[in-house]
Image (cartoon, rainbow, N blue to C red; front, side, top):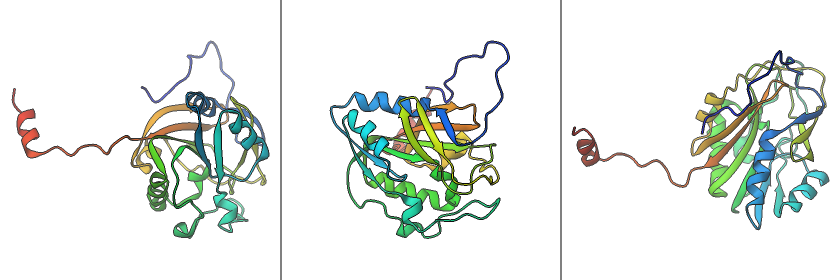
Length: 225
């Protein structure tokens, strides 16, 4: 399946609205909901702050939700003007030690890790997932982002409300789809949606198995014409 999922524009399309507080389209979350509805029961790991609305909505889909508010639990309460907050003690983040989750809501948290630390985070998430687990992330390649994570509230399956506590914006994280893919070893991309506000929603899935290393015997047979 190709990375991009969008219809061809008819006529002139409006420009980006920007990463601002308010209600925004969320085709990525809608696609995740479609997948969860195919399961009689599921377990979701939400890495954002606790939200009664989010838990209630996911419960209607038959999901049991575990919340791990990484940003606030790590003591990261402030970001400086024009500088993005970074998680510093990745090994001490309050992630679960066990569990078999069917979906992970990573929201925009990839913006707030140093690139070298993201594989450590992903490895910990993979250990509490099962083959086929989906991960939803929001990322910006060119749009400036808040210095601290956005709080996302579910309005309906295709709409999320962005609650942004700071008016300042930090530099664009330059998280292109290909760069995000490289930062998530073990997960493969399913869909990407480009939003008008400059963000992208990326839906990944944990591989069933690790890619098999070719053996010398297979290489020899593969080279025969």
